[in-house]
Length: 167
Image (cartoon, rainbow, N blue to C red; front, top):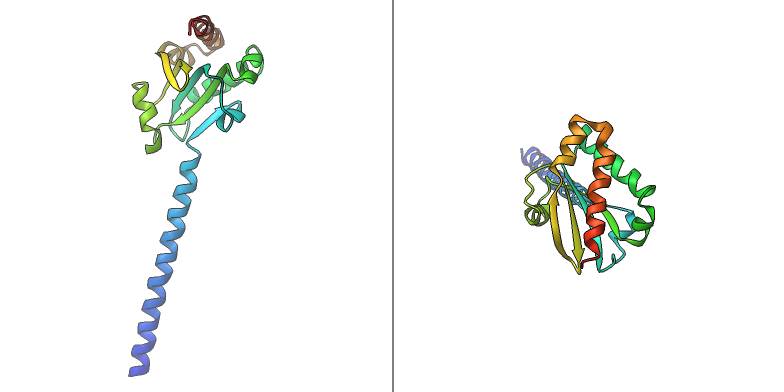
């Protein structure tokens, strides 16, 4: 009888400790996922110090991007690789993608008055944002007239480039 009780007790302890290990594995995976909530383009600006004065184009999206957000990201990166490549290389224009469904991005969402998905342009001077503008019209163009999207983004970037010299 004692031997049976001992075996049952041992089995219960093994199940208990294996569940603790399982919970620890889940917690570790959650931490790994939260690291990927912000992306820079060009990527080097995630670790390099950008110039004191630069333009930031910030796209707020859900972690599982919709077709509109994917199109916006593709078009922005294409423009930064071609028409604005000199500005992107120098850090004068930086694109940031922010996943809105993570708590660590809440302060940036509040800074730009964003609830969920949005596209914003701003001028950053020594870490402070000026000329903050939600590009609602660009987002709507991506949804309704994708063939005009590139032209609309160029218009917004050119306005910010003209204003950048004032700072």
